[in-house]
Structure formats: structure tokens, C-alpha cells
Length: 266
Length: 307
Ligand SMILES: Nc1ncnc2c1ncn2[C@@H]1O[C@H](COP(=O)(O)OP(=O)(O)OP(=O)(O)O)[C@@H](O)[C@H]1O
Ligand SMILES: [Mg+2]
Image (cartoon, rainbow over all chains, first blue to last red; front, side, top):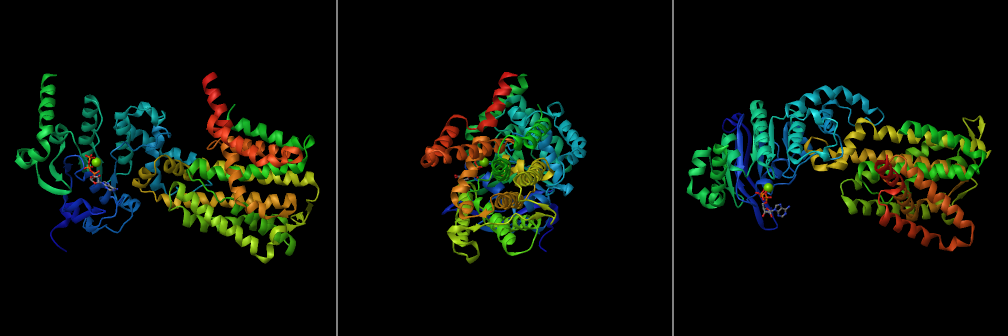
């Protein structure tokens, strides 16, 4: 074995993805410390979502490897990686729109019951999962919506439901792709509080454009630019890096300041 | 009216119907209704459009017909074996098809079904264009003679109820829940740890087996297994029945099958017979254009808006 890999829950080695000659992810060596909230940031098209797709094997890497708890998981299929405890969310909200809110969470709880191929049994046997599902909905403040059809929820609540569904699997590592994207100020606050809360017992890797959220949540930040890692560190060091300011923050640093002021004012 | 009450009402109707209508016609409707329900399990609840379901209907029919003619088996055993043969064929089709998405899935099922069609066209035991004629209905459990149409009808009704029950149960089972989740958001289901292709495959096998059950039963009713049942027209017809009735609804395929079979019977008798395909085509176009959710879907919408 090489270095004390076990401190890192997830590691990539020379991870590369080329689309027909265009390298979207370029030789990325990522190390995620167990227990951290690790943010992956970078301008649009930097390759952040592609990294997520590689980590969860929704895309096949061109080269390089992925280690989870020291084990090489590169050859595994997406569902198998999920069963290992790496659960991802998607950039656009990923719920089951025409199932009820409760059923959304229950579908995640159901997997470990081992009855998911039982087509001859009544779905009523799933009712024994309802209490657990309700508890999860409570933890994200959705208990009053349990019987609503998911499609009717507001965007922020859908994202909260997504987190509850993910939590149902008790993942060791949660991958969140822009959990606050497209949200109003209030929802951003709610979801980032929620992420903080659920990060207690697990590791989170998140893509996030809202630097205010990043500054509040992230223990460590990796900056991606044109598929390659530009720099890495805590918020203070990353935001002070002139290359980062040039590549990324030039346009958005003002947003951060504006938000900070707005918050101070309120 | 909830589903349970409606089911009981329909059952009462089905029990009394042969006092008014010709039992062989009713049995035909039930066979196609079962076929459509089996197809709808796949399209409506797993989101998979098969364009090859005739292969299963036909396989059930040929296997059962062949066994009734050539072996001393009783009809219930011949039907079970026909059903299993369809399920087995479905297992192979499914294995090859579920890896594909959308239109490619439909194309793979169509291509495989065409292979099956040419096999039955050439195979020595199917009698080519003539088909297996004069299939004996035999005696149920060796005891109950099925040659009486009334008896046959109630036998078909029993099979239909069993098949219909299984489809409903599948839809409302833990497996059905996963299937719905996959239909709603396949990537999310994967990311929750479900091997979606295995679930699609099982749905395909169940659907194929029940389609074969319909075909087996139909062969006994008409005492005939022929190429019509494996022709791609038949695959198209079941799509039509399902869409006209209302895809993804429990009752839609029943109604759609009843509607189409009635129309065919009515038209093929009269001078309109030559135009039957044109008329069916027109019905299809009208349905797709004006009420995309089918008759049942439309009724449900009406009910939602007015009560
Ligand atoms: N399947 C694909 N085929 C070809 N090119 C792709 C594919 N997926 C992503 N890309 C390209 O790879 C680059 C990185 O895309 P990616 O979605 O990973 O960026 P991102 O950092 O997530 O951006 P954003 O902040 O906009 O979400 C983009 O140029 C994109 O067009
Ligand atoms: Mg992205």
C-alpha cells in the first residue's frame, strides 16, 4: 500500500476524461479528507459535473483511477458504487416527481429491505418504513408535505427532499452538485444550514457556485479550471490566490461582497 | 367509485355478459385485454415501448397448439407451458433489449420479433401459412370438457382474472415501486443503488409471459395458432389498444382492447372490411392528436375537473 490512504475517504489518481479529443477532466488528483465538507469550484464548463459523473461512473474515465476507502472502485458500475456508500445528487433536481414525498424517501429505504424484486407481494409491506421515512422528512422540515405529490413542491423543497432521500441511504460520502443553484436567498440559507447539519457524521463533496455558501461551509476547496486543478486550500488561501481571482472570482467576487453586505444589513 | 368497486362491477358484468353476447367474441376480447394489460405493464409502468410483443403472443399460441395436437397433455398444462415458453423468450429478448434506450429499445424488440416471425414461417411444426388448425380444446384437468363455448368462456375469464390480478399486484408491489421510480427518473434510481436494467428485465419477462398466456388461451378459444399472431401488425395493434384505452392506467387497456376488437369484428363482417386498416389508422391518429391520455385518461381528467 502507498501512503496512509485511509485518512482520505476518496482519492483520484490522474483522473482524465476526453470527449472526442476535448479533455474535460485533465489529470485530476483529488484527495477528500474524511469528515470534511470539500467544495469543488470553478467557472462554467470547468469540468465539475464531469468529475462527479466519473466518480459515480455515470461516465467511464479515459484514464486514471478512483479509490474509495483505499479500494479501487474504478471498474464498478454506478449502482454498485452507490451501494458502497457514495451517493450523488444531480445538478438539476433529482426527485421522483409523480411519487409522493414520502414515497420518494421510502424508495431509498426500501433497497436494503431486500424485497425490491418481489412483484407478488403487496406494497403495503413497505408501510413499515413509514416511520423512518417520516423521521427523515422531519430532519429536512418536510413532514407536513409527506403526502403531497412531489411535482407540486417548490424548488427549494425538492432539493431538501433530495437530501432526505440521500440521507436515507446513510451514505459515507455525499456528492452534491450545486445544491443551491437557482434558489432564492431564503432557500439558499435553508439548504446550506441543512448541509451543515447533515455533514456531522459524514463526508461531503459539493460543487457550488455561491461563494458565500462555500465560505461558510467548506473545510477545503479545490478549484478546477479547464479540467485541471488550479489550486487547493481553505477559503482564505484560495480566495487570496491571484490566479483564482483571475480565472474565476473576477466576475463573482463582487457577488460575494454584495451578499455579505446584504446579510450584514438584514 | 374506487378501483375495487369498479373491478367487482366489471367482474359481475363479465359473469353475466355471455347471456347476451356471443361467448367466443367475449373470450376474444378477454384474450386481447390480457395481452394489452401485459403490454401496458411494460409501457405504462416501466416506460418501455416494445414493438415485438406479437412474438410472445404467438409463441404462447404455437406452443400450446402444438402440445394440444401432439401430446396428450391437458389444456391447463399446455397453457402453462406456452406461458413459460413466452417468458423464456422474453428473458432472452429482455436481456438484449434493456440495455438500449427509447427508440433503440423498440427497434431491438422489433428486430428480434421479426426473427421469431421468420422462424415460425419456416419451422416445420407450425404449418407455415396455414397455421395449426383444429387445435383440440381438450378437457380441463381431464375432467371438464371445454368444447362447449360457454364453459370455455368461463375458463378464459378465470385465466384473465388471474393474469389481471397479477399485473395489478405487480404494479402495487415493492417491485412496482422501484419500477415507477425508474420510469420517473432512471439516473436517480441508479444513484440510489438500483441496477435499473435488472428491474426492467424482470418487468419484460413478466410482461412477455402474460402476453404468452393470452396467446395460449386465444389458441384454445379459436382452435387455431397462426402467423397472424406473430406478425408485426399484432405488435402494432396492442400498442393501439393500449394507447386508445389509456396507457399507464389500470383499466385503459381493457377498454382499448374491447373497443378495437369490437370495431374489427363489426367492420370485417360488412362491406367496410377492405378499409379496416385505414380506419384503424385514423382512430390511432385521432387518439394521439386529440386525447393523448386515452379514453380512461380523458375520463379521469373529466372527473377531476367536474367533481
Ligand atoms: N457527454 C459529453 N460529451 C461531450 N462534451 C461534454 C460532455 N459532458 C460535458 N462535456 C463538456 O465538458 C466540459 C465540462 O462540462 P461540465 O458539465 O463538467 O462543466 P461544469 O464545471 O459542471 O460546468 P457548470 O458550472 O456549467 O455546471 C464542457 O465543455 C462540456 O461541454
Ligand atoms: Mg455542472
